Image 1: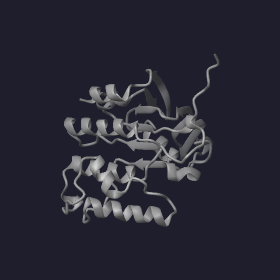
Image 2: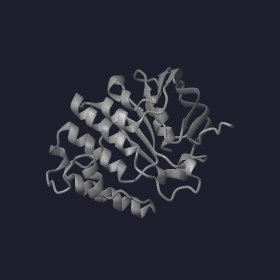
Image 3: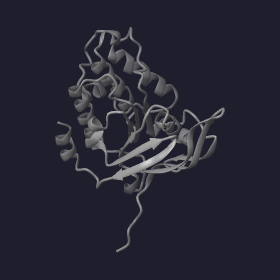
Image 4: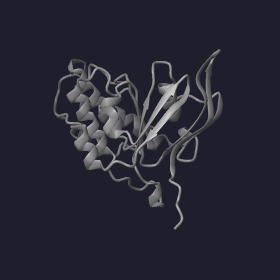
Length: 245
């Protein structure tokens, strides 16, 4: 019986990113399979954020090739969502007003906000009818609203940069449960081949113990390249949710 290789959600081939004399990434080669969940560890300056921004199509490599779903990231922006460590929300607006605003921007670009603002807020445990401005939210509520903003785009590739920053342990565990549930969401109308369907998560963090339930693969970056890789068999979603508790 032949072994069919997994489809790749993202791939970097000998990628370097230079800022003057500083190399944020150094000849980095790494692959992320469709439907996988990867946690990226490393100190500040290791290249974690640069990796995510490159996969999101926000920056280009100095050398090497970056592909997402077999093409340049910008060609698949509808299938990618990126959440930085900044909330990227307007403090004077409510969570629902924020999400509706970003949904309109997506529609103007021709993108689809399939999740819908109300549904996305409920998915992260926030009440869409809450009128309080985001600027008055706790840090945990702001992170959840930020996650709802990216989930409403219904992404197949979800890129999260330090999503647990300033969260208490309970809020971080709740976010892990949400992300575990997100991986089970069906993907509709994106590919004829069923093997190409699935939700892929790449997450950077300094807090490995919080992300462990999601870590099918753990990459440790150092000096702009991968220093070590630890893999485990694909986690059962129900078991991962139990681990998160």
